Image (tube, rainbow, N blue to C red):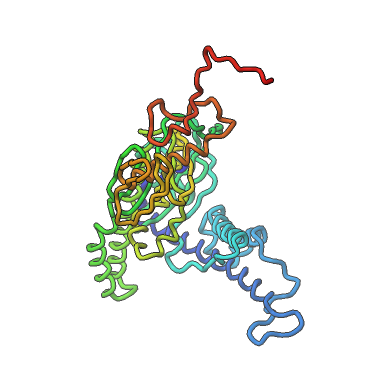
Length: 414
């Protein structure tokens, strides 16, 4: 697990950390330049010379792999003494970060690694520690020393610190502590009370139990103030001290919006786990809807982040989480399963077949719940109670409660 703590380095320590980030950025860009040069040298046709590109490297030169570039660091430190100021493992992690991006590009077929501009390398990874670097008041890093830390929650017993990542956001510094415990954690099994969650712009979420949560719209609340700060930033001369001060104010506002939104998502995820044992959500790609007319509001709500946080909170608290098919959840009756066509302007669900009436979003949550329960209705789960004992709308056909066979005998086949 990762715990994030706020740290407070002094001015000298901040300057050292920033210089290390710039050194790692230069090493990252140099290694990427080697890869790009090798790729460009292989684009020339075999039987003719290209007017635009020619072989700029020997034809038998091997690809600059991760091991090769890591082995070249000791000789590079002799030529560039600045590389020796950074801890060796931290510098190696910058090269490894590049090759993780390269492997992702090879697997996906797109997303070629890009050069890091000035100030874009904002983290340093310390991958190994002999002893625990965290005390109640300080974080001890190599070549830097003790840094005050706000240990707002202690590290649990049995966990050891594996690595620490120093992260800078706006003008604030954080330590992302990776802790590990050698235990086997089983995935939660389906059990208890189910709940379906439908998310939207008019109501942030609506559950199958009838719980409605209004959208907080964090970005919209701060948009006017952020617009004012950005207007002042545009009037400053770039690279000046006043420009840097104003840029930090803008970054601090974005950081505040991000923290507030994430805190709201965690609270809602814990609220769902307090009331249910199984949580079902729609399997949607919110990146597509974020490119539409309501893209700004979709990004402000951050439904994808909320789903990821809910999945993590359910795993941590032993609750079952699953995603279901999102096709037609708002056009289906949760009671009888009939198709009920309605526009977005219609906010009440009324089924002409069974005369069932409820809120449109609540009905969608009930359909999501029913689909989640139908996924669990497998022969391997026969005879297991997977829902609560109470009668839920639309769940009568998916209950797994075995009926009593007292006084009933099976007739022999003739």
